[in-house]
Image (cartoon, rainbow, N blue to C red):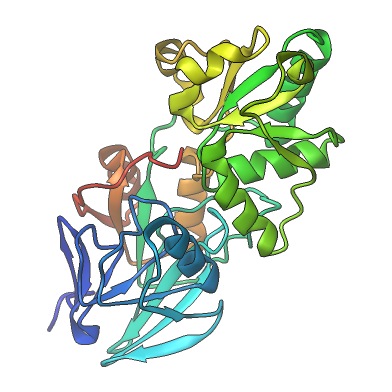
Length: 332
């Protein structure tokens, strides 16, 4: 009798679905690729054909140029060889999807990256019971328990209120985190213009084109210093301490990331205001999701694999590490 899931084979460069002759999130160009979302550690250019949501394909077009794309709507099923594949929301970023594979009476769900808490910029995670759940474990340690997002945003706004002669420079990743933070600020009543680094402009325009209400955004480059006093400026993490940031009016340096739970990471980047805002499931969300789905097996793609595997084994759930390479915290 064949082993459960024997038709799906992990390789260092990705997950190969043999009866479909297709790869999921391959790190190298492949003839056929199914892509969970648009972050650069999951979506690469150069594939012969790509299946992904319309939003993910648009993000890939923005980053890599036109793609040989096949758009798949949430809930739609496509047949690839002997496999039926469908895409359901993952709650990670705009267009992110779990890929549900059905073959030979078995169902395997590949989560990609995901989170369980509300995000006003993307569709929420949809739990799909399955035989095998292929999950990330970016924050797969008990120390990672993310606080409420609203509280972190309120901390940012309070610091802004207390320092009207300064600006707050927030390091935030260009895809997903920047747009989410903008909308979260709007939801907490901040409707002033938000200034953005040029590296964020194209993806903010893309989000707005898909109907995400970002409010008024202005380019931060070339603006008089006095105009930025009492304002929020968003930039990629790499710009926090470079020459670009030196022209800002006495900036309070912040960063929005799940990694801000680790004080050493904040110190390394000279972050004065660490904001724990993550687009990944934390430890409690990872374990609660596994309990909810009740899979026969859990396969762990990347992150803190060993701790999550140990948790599964202590709860009588068979688990294995896939040891994929090239995936990690490009997005958080």
